[in-house]
Image 1 (cartoon, rainbow, N blue to C red):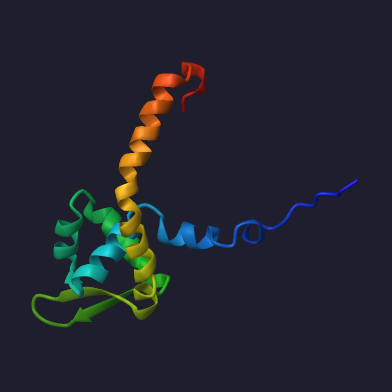
Image 2: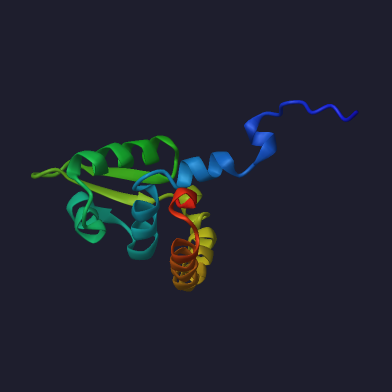
Amino acid sequence: MNETTAVEPVQACPIAPVVDLVFSRWTTPILWTLNEYGRQRFVELERRIGVITPKVLTQRLRQLERDGLVVREYHAEVPPRVEYEISPLGRSLAPLFHALADWSPNLTEVEKARQEFDTTQPAHRRP
């Protein structure tokens, strides 16, 4: 008889910690924007992302700075100026983002599959 033992989640799916880090809410749009448009002030970043609140943007930027994915630069001027830039570590994620952007045309196929499922499956089988 074959014995099954529990494994650590990282062993079961080694990319899970990366997915948790990079694809947490708002992280991807922030990193994408900084990678595509370069160094930005808080308000510029907020405008480019669009629907994020200042509180959430502040929280996410602090976490990304802590994770080493974003660099915050404070300029002691009057008025004070703060700029954010993607770090070299954050920039190393660019190929991943570009691969996902290249895959995004497949979203129309995903939508078709959903519609097909919803029209052919009984209601109790739908999510």
